[in-house]
Length: 209
Image 1 (spheres, rainbow, N blue to C red):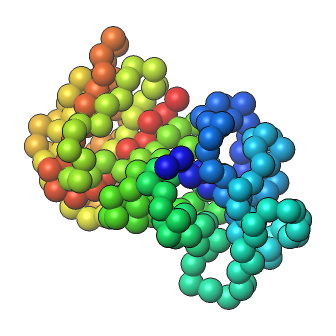
Image 2: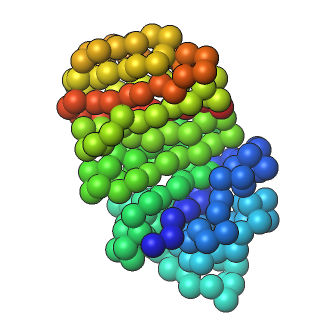
């Protein structure tokens, strides 16, 4: 099954950078005002979803799901659930973090939702890549030294058994709580690949390009 790319309406400044991650066979879902990124990304939609409260329905000859304005799910969350229903395993979200902090935090929580059902999710913005490292991961998550920094943020409760190797600030079977976020701004040792693993819980891994 191809990867599903979901495009939200948050600002994208570095189209060249973001576009470099998109594959020719990606299944593209544009959410409402995410359609404004279609030209910059250079990819036509396979599916459009939205309540069109912030962008006019372009009425393209593409499958379109029109949602009510009053609903529990945001357009982006609905798009993820619809893609799960269609059997996708790998998710790539762009245009989902930015000016609206409420939407940003809500969209980051989508990564937790995907991890909870055993699916892979990644958020890309102009500067970084975000994913979940959890006790579901059978192998350590690798981070190469092309990234300037990486951070581990607890967004889901106490996390235990946190191990970091090959980095400036290593950890061994440590605990990170939501109240004390000391996993911010680590660095991969030159010429090395850092490894991150979690024994219990979930951490948000942010890799800064």
